[in-house]
Length: 170
Image 1: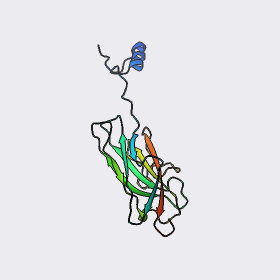
Image 2 (image 1 turned 180 degrees about the vertical axis):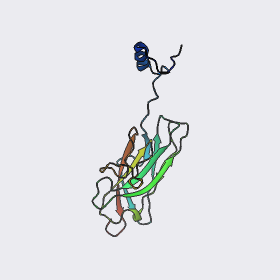
Image 3 (image 1 turned 90 degrees about the vertical axis):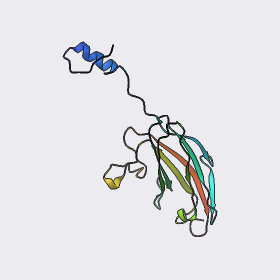
Image 4 (image 1 turned 45 degrees about the horizontal axis):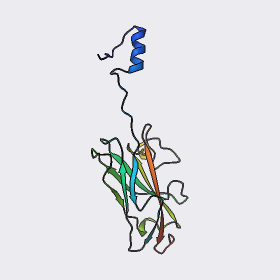
């Protein structure tokens, strides 16, 4: 027997509706995305030399199989004095499976020659689109490039990037 949701003056029915909800069920919980695997492993130091780009491959997962994931690769973020850089932005479509297709990024000498070594390479993953200050959205001043809306989940994965390219980044 289901409970019909409608305005009723009987206080006992109102208490019942508050306790069990309109259809007797709770809304599904939102799950946080997770790193299933990466090559190289999270926290590794990658050495990049001129003409020898390295590839990062990350396998992401999310129990919410019908939701996309939003991924940003950021250099020297957060908190770098020289200013962080957004290197790559990808949307991983829902796959109907917990584990998603691999996300790949190839850091090279062009991305990291303006500031001294080592560089922090951060992959930020969210289950909702990242907020954008240029569209008037309120971003966290401590996380301006990967702020997420209320109720969203964010995952951060970090590697260190050591460049041997000549210039100030080596």
